[in-house]
Image (cartoon, rainbow, N blue to C red; front, side):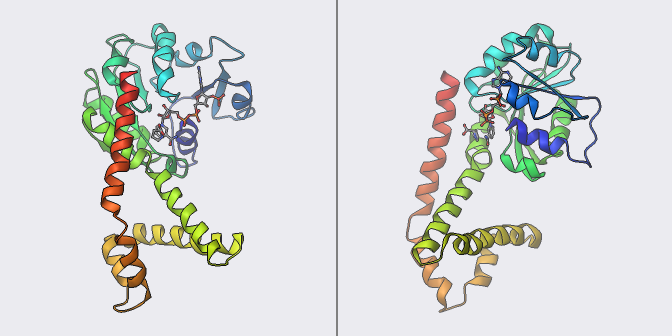
Length: 263
Ligand SMILES: NC(=O)C1=CN([C@@H]2O[C@H](COP(=O)(O)OP(=O)(O)OC[C@H]3O[C@@H](n4cnc5c(N)ncnc54)[C@H](OP(=O)(O)O)[C@@H]3O)[C@@H](O)[C@H]2O)C=CC1
Ligand SMILES: O=C(O)[C@@H]1CCC=N1
């Protein structure tokens, strides 16, 4: 996820004050930035000081390690944070209070829940601020994530729901595409043809949804000729109990965030 945000931040039209410093665990991941003039990268496996060096002088520190690693990384960097530096975590299920307990009170903590379309500037990110995150801090964090898409500010008690909808949402759509391609193959299309038809349709329909500004129900209506073919397929799909399926899937997602928060 950190890489997706970084890709968005590195887009030519985005202007960042100062250098972007990246840390990774492996030297191999850091080596991907060799020769880059806009990013410097350090690997913690070869430089145990990497994270501490990286945060020195930084106005914003974005943590994008796995949820169960966030607290250890915060303990590691807390003493090197600049006073007032904003700490942003994108981790699922890691509460603001648990992070605030590990950093100086002068460092505002913000939780962000982005998604992977950020890599092409079409991300959706929910943000929620802690006690020291005043309006200026939230505007700054909003501006960072607006470089990679759209931003919704929420109270922290809604962040798990944001994760369930938009954070994980791309995976649901990709699962749909996988199933759609597989169904096309079962109709006799070879792999390439099935992908062309099914993936091309999803990409085109998503672009149409975005560019038309129309409600998806209206766009669906325009495909569904009365007494036509689409109608028959839609009736079958609607009989599958999607509302309940989605409710259960999102509830399971939120439950997992709560488990992660509980440790
Ligand atoms: N994937 C997604 O769609 C989303 C993920 N998130 C959150 O993003 C976080 C990361 O998830 P994800 O991107 O899937 O995880 P990945 O495992 O893909 O990425 C984790 C990154 O952290 C680096 N890393 C690991 N340990 C350290 C360390 N000690 N110091 C510095 N860097 C380190 C890894 O380096 P290396 O490359 O060398 O292994 C890797 O680049 C999670 O907390 C998740 O909840 C939030 C929203 C969406
Ligand atoms: O699966 C996860 O835990 C992360 C959080 C949201 C998307 N991916």
